[in-house]
Length: 441
Image (cartoon, rainbow, N blue to C red; front, top):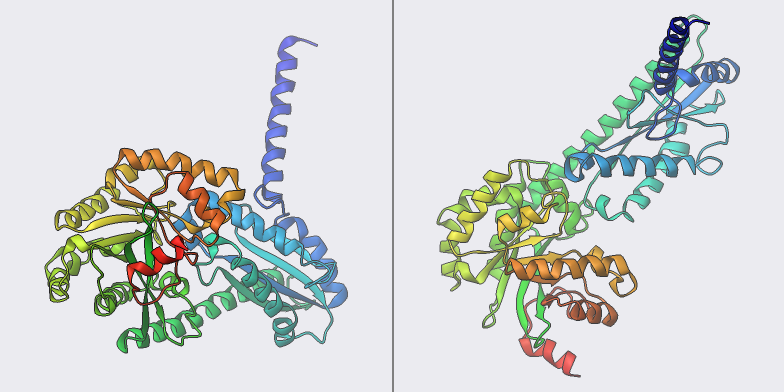
């Protein structure tokens, strides 16, 4: 065979190979490992023609995970969602359930369940949709990055009935459309309830404000207090995380944060030489109340000055326009306020951006403090952060210290300050001597 003919054959082979790879990529999703819908249509056709009905459960993952934590985390959580859902086979759904997604890179998981003719939408909801939703909600509460998000999942459901007069594909895609609409409808209904609840909380100031001490590990005196707010008696917002994670998705965040700051000032009884730590979102650095004179006047009425206040910037939202954010933070510092960065993560993912903000405090997240005495990687991260903090003249505050072993580890690593239930639960400011007596004893 001539060399030219060989090249032609090789080129044709490569074209066929590439076409096959492209075709295969359309049939299997590389992220989840699941077949896409076209690959399972024939199997669905057999089930529907035999059983006369198919139930569908659609599980959608909140896009907010990607906007807050980035696409890598989003895809990791989706992969875990698929793995969890596959484990439902034989437990929450029958063994012959077909798992698929509509197309590659889709993050709507589809569970097709062959059912008998007695199944209607109500029975599918009660027998499959609700138990699956409850199980996924339990899981989401175990994942640190998902606790502050609600809802994490959209759950929709539909029943497809065999009709020989209708095109089979139209029955299937019609069921997917109904399940998707149901999932979004449920989410919007819950959103409306939550907005009304939050408006009621703000209007009637139904917030409980407590203070957790931040302890100096050198002398065990109280360095400051973090003001913590949560809704009183709300089953919709049972804790601070659920309250504020929803607020960032609404136009009510500014009002809620202003009310929290006001309550912090009203209830704070300042012991000598202590700081008041107040949480603010990245959006709040642009609030005219802070950039103008309104909040300063409120401080003065309480006998405080900007130098007594540390704004803890939380990162419930990733920072999009960093130069603008940096300038807004500088304006707060120029007025005399001190700055702390809460939880290293999406908004402050690089040490470079932290250095540019020039914080006075870095708060080491409680998830990294938990069991740090048994976790070499957590300890190594902290030991890397300590010299960095020294270079930018920032103090490190370890959050969520609950055991003596955790305390000993962070102290040996060079941490300056700490807070957590080991020292005190959130409450009204106690005398400094309470903490000192505990440790001297």
